[in-house]
Length: 528
Ligand code: GLC
Ligand code: CA
Image (cartoon, rainbow, N blue to C red):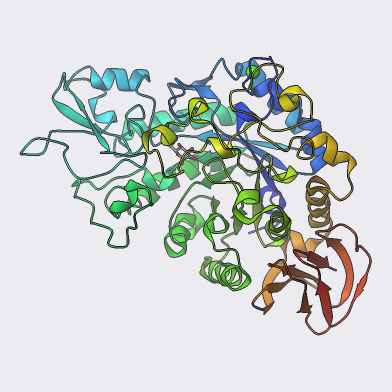
């Protein structure tokens, strides 16, 4: 297995297309907007973009409810725009990953309309239809991730259909061979156009228990958690048969040259996550590793999770790390702006492929959304728990002008405060900015083989600081992170002294380090 595949040494940048850049002035980001910012992305130094869904959709879940997998939604543009984006991204050496949403369609997809047309429909079995429970009511106790029962009654046929998310997102029946083939055809449609791979939405949900057994009660449920957590989704997700489905998807990709990439969105404990690499590594190349999204932010917790993850990896399984996405509160909000710099250094110096969420490179924080501007259906269906995802989906800030350079119209979500400092134009000029830090870290990562592909080893973990090594052949890089707001002396390892390649404060480059290194509050350094 070679280590120089593009997706092993590259950095992925996630674009939420509604919020990246608005090319036609309607207040919503689009494909032309992304194309017009490719120079920025190559200047930043990323290697691939993953674009959240751009396909035809009624937008009940902002594109995660697809009504035609092979058409672009007019909000975002057309197929021509995708072709042009692919050509221009590839011209700059940037790969393009699309979001594949195979678990469910929109309820307006013609497949579902046909399926719902009657019990005898040729596509009835493409979705999951069940009779009511013997005493009436939903067929079993399965819950929707987005609140309420996962079953909705279709009065015309008297049967219920299953939806892991919104009622507008009916789940496909992946036990049906024709469903599989239709989705493989969709994959080929995009791969033939030159797409470099897919991030597959909720891949661990694809297969459900064939007996539709009730899910057991979760005795660890705490009030304040999502109501979905009341049950353990043992029978509605992470079923053994899912791996065969994934292996078939992988085989579709393997039929293409140039190392196309398959990433799986999987929220599971580490031991379960690892099974998604597949037998003989024929599963997804990268099962998204979301631990940094969920961890307590302190040195011992982070050291333990890195070690456990490294230890759990199967042989030749390539690691990956995620710090933010469109479903989670932003890192600058979770840990504060100063520690967000430490987080960036961590993300970009760990072993494995990093995924960077748009806007995190300029330190964007969650934006609180007034109730009358709420867009996310989750925020509306489960109010009061802070589960709405609009705060982390607000427009990218390109400058401090009106509309933050994102749009000339009223933006679909508010821009938010702090635009004078938190914008690309201001930070490009500032050698100490969060953006300059990201660019420098990406540069160092590219230049140092030990950071790109070297092994990882914990050097020292204190109560407040964490030091680790990355090494390959004779090269050794040391990363020392202060996880707190007090200065701390971090031990290096014998013989690992050297010069500072980058500090989170961007002011100590070239300084010589011997046996210990004094870290200022919230400071991290890379020594090479
Ligand atoms: C994934 C997506 C999320 C979406 C859900 C349903 O978790 O990341 O945004 O709402 O799937 O498709
Ligand atoms: Ca637009």
